[in-house]
Length: 158
Ligand code: SF4
Image 1 (cartoon, protein in one colour):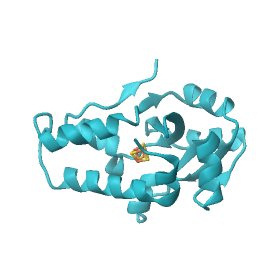
Image 2 (tube, rainbow, N blue to C red; image 1 turned 180 degrees about the horizontal axis):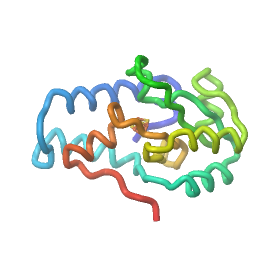
Image 3 (cartoon, rainbow, N blue to C red; image 1 turned 90 degrees about the vertical axis):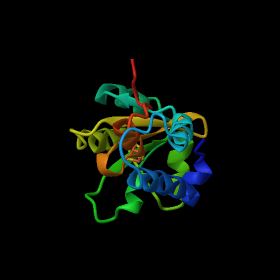
Image 4 (cartoon, rainbow, N blue to C red; image 1 turned 30 degrees about the horizontal axis):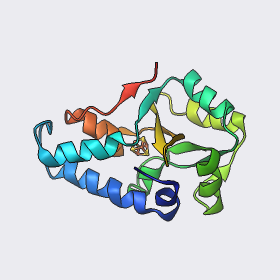
């Protein structure tokens, strides 16, 4: 499971980098692949859910603190277009305290996510709670790469 310390310290990037390398170094469906299944179990610990804009706004409204910062995966792809995520509650405070995000208002967070039209909004559990909403960018989104290779990890929030 990814923890707040993994996000602030950057070790989450090592896991993401390994996953992306695995996808790049293999071909075709990974449903019968042992390493693929192991990766799927790790991914599922984040319990990622696809949100509508309204559902994302509800999480933001209920948050005690909000921050906006570069989507975590983008650090591995600085040449790509900037995509920003919304961090909530204790993750927001922690990311802002290490300069990886800036504290934001509810309106700013909603505006940030509205800009991402065309990309599915995905919320992930960090340290066991839903604290990160990302406008997933397919070329480097681990979840979406996994789905493309038959490792089903994404569900739509009902
Ligand atoms: S939702 Fe996808 S692109 Fe965003 S941080 Fe998670 S894995 Fe990376």
